[in-house]
Amino acid sequence: MVQAYILVQTEVGKAADVAKEIAKIVGVTQAEDVTGPYDVIVRAEADNVDELGRLVASGIQSVEGITRTLTCPVVYI
Image (cartoon, rainbow, N blue to C red; front, side, top):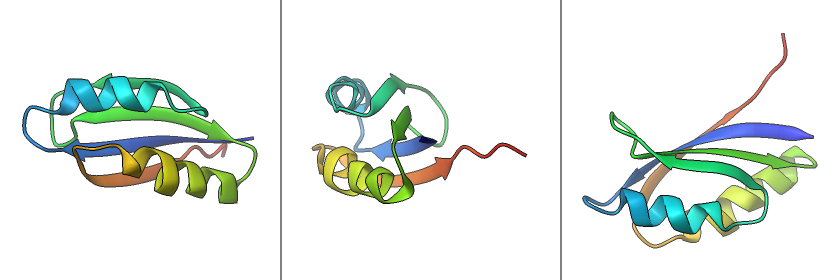
């Protein structure tokens, strides 16, 4: 199981709507709109890195109102 945080920037005024849409995507465990340099922070999980990539590229990035994402995989050191 691979887990990651996805930091999302949105168009102005779209953070709440984007977070609600992302929360509906299979593999997303949490999506919250926040303040700061990113507008939405997402916690997601997938069986492997390839599936995580598909989740981000085909699922999350297809949500209307997103301008940029940054994927941060969780590591256990």
